[in-house]
Image (cartoon, rainbow, N blue to C red; front, side, top):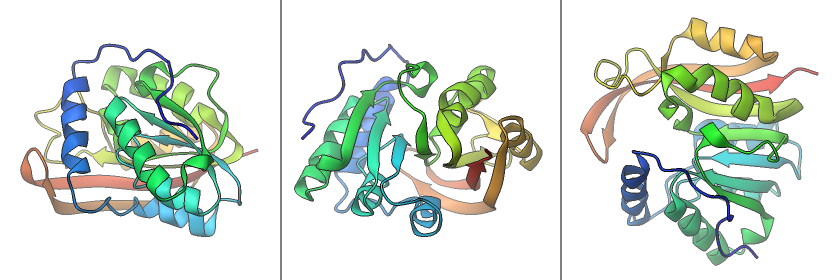
Length: 221
């Protein structure tokens, strides 16, 4: 049973305090949020039983719970140490923590080479918080590059019509063309993609226009 996070040192990040506060807010919610829909699709339609999965931006366990319930083996990664602590607690309460392989309290930008490759790498919108000047390198080396050949990537990205696009140059906003080129460059086939524009209530900024891409992709042999 894992009861504490990995001994890997978390680098100082100006957003760390904000992410920890965000996790505290999430943890006070009455229920753990529903899983990211493409993760449910991955579990139901694509991922073989007993697969190894890297869960990037685990929050309080919304994606880890269904993955573990389906018999997969999960490594948790989140920049906020309290996210991993709360996720482990929620898993222990459900008897699911035995399926946790490792925990990493660290930014995806500095993920050690020892981690991976995995049968699947998943996340919600964590990837859009990678700074634009690092985005391609990090996605290729630390995200898509950590997927086994014949394995899967599942994740979400912010689109160029997102409310934050004009005033948040530190985030990465993509177009369909940029997404297609990124996955082609790493020899991935996009299995499913949904381009969505909707109004969403956020914890920090009230109602916002969310332009997002939700993707399931498979790495070719």
